[in-house]
Image (cartoon, rainbow over all chains, first blue to last red; front, side):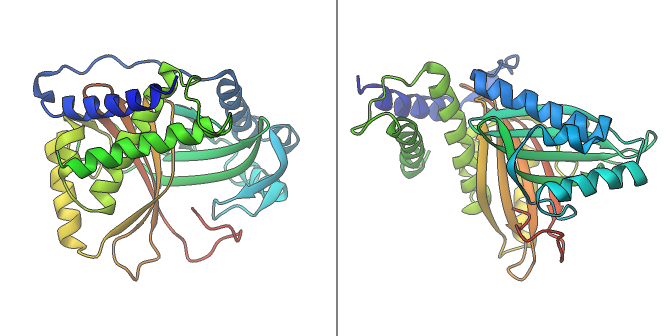
Length: 161
Length: 163
């Protein structure tokens, strides 16, 4: 019954020990994440919020995915639902042709992290964006982000995503 | 591999499992810990220890032990591979001897691990908020790295802080 904890500790030790002679190991193909049903639902809600903000540009639609409070950490957006409403209005006024592509998503309990490519205008190189959403009972209640212009050059050939 | 690192890794996993099991009953029953949950906690543990050791404690131990030599690097500032990461790490810490980094939150699905960090290159800097993402491959280690860095602006439209 209580053997699982020592087992996981041993597995970590094994992982760390085996990570040492990795020189000859080929990179295996990506393993699919194993998410709970609630995590899958949270990911869909995050996708729906993105579509409401950047495609529909419709605050009434976006609000359906928010909980009773919406704590904002992005510095250019005011707190709460009113802040999001204003941000969507600014998108409509200033960058109506904005588009996005979600590149990666990670769901973990009540958190969802997304990495996306944001293009304010169709011909711009655009920005790389991480968003972290915290959920309560399936609704989004808190948001953090980091955003950075995609540079013209890179020290590697892999692209930023 | 320094033994204390291994012990701390084990401790992180142990604490994670305890936190997960504590909701059910005390003393902890771990019967409900599935293989998928265990894999997820291992990924969380390895990457958290990696990031803390590399940018918090500023050592290269975990770059050597937990990073694949053929790491795929997406940060435009860093060259490919473990060698590129080591070079970046050395340059960063040589240029900024008082560099500090604090991990604020970690999310993972067992494959990708994101680390939300407050970085200060100099103690007097307002700092950068970064979100790193690492792909973790069992029995290989950290195989891929992405990051978005965002300088903390002087002002904000809300009072909640960027991180």
